Amino acid sequence: MSITASLIGYKDAIEAALSHADYSHSFDDIVRGVLTGQLHFYPSGNDFAIMEIQQYPRFNAYHCFLAGGTTDALLELQEIITQNAKALNCDRLTFTGRRGFLRRLKDSGWEEQAVHMTYPIG
Image 1 (cartoon, rainbow, N blue to C red):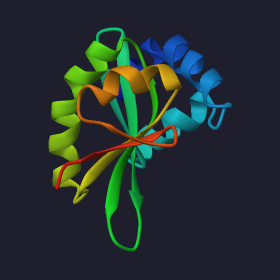
Image 2 (image 1 turned 60 degrees about the vertical axis):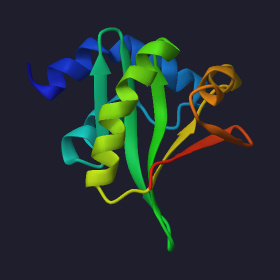
Image 3 (image 1 turned 180 degrees about the horizontal axis):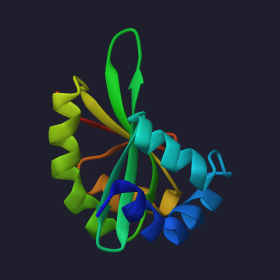
Image 4 (image 1 turned 180 degrees about the vertical axis):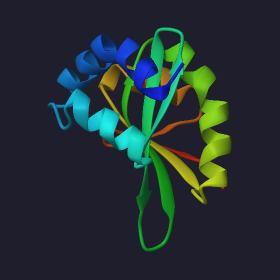
């Protein structure tokens, strides 16, 4: 299955997640970003994460700015995302999401920084 077909299969879930992200992107923006390599799409069953590299002067972060599904399924994606983050020269994962994710992610090693969370991998 092509990446475009895979994304189209997640269109409703992606658009639902975008409604919680103040529509920072359109679905077409997500597709374009994934196809150009600016964004990275991690699908798993009915769940997904969309990541981007954020470069700072002192470190690189692999940032999840959009996710949908159950917390357990998203945590299962964490291992492959962490491996890819290391390969992309990132030393941490970051996540911005609804406060509901915070309760569950804190138990898995994530640390609260406002409602923006970080997971050191270096």
